[in-house]
Image 1: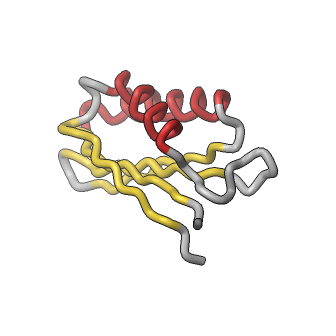
Image 2 (image 1 turned 45 degrees about the vertical axis):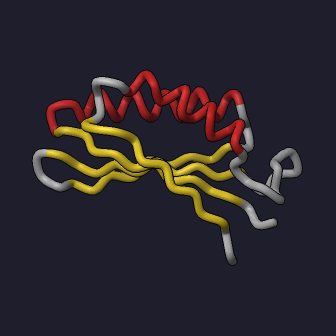
Image 3 (image 1 turned 90 degrees about the vertical axis):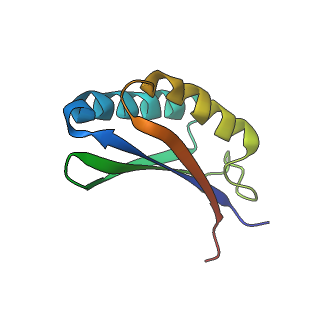
Length: 103
């Protein structure tokens, strides 16, 4: 089975962008401390008054990583639980998409 990665997108209003950026980066750091093989990124597209934000999560190819499956349900649940602290900073729901690495 190929490795699974997840992508989470949502919108952030311009007046909340600085606070949201700090909160997301801190959340990702904590998740990486708990799971050293976890790799995360934050990408942002400026759409004017709101921007679209994308968090991506994958596992490194280190021997301690679950290379066969990538992001499993337990890690996905941990990411969602950690994201609860973003309530009030994002505009609308978080949308989670999962993809399997082909090459």
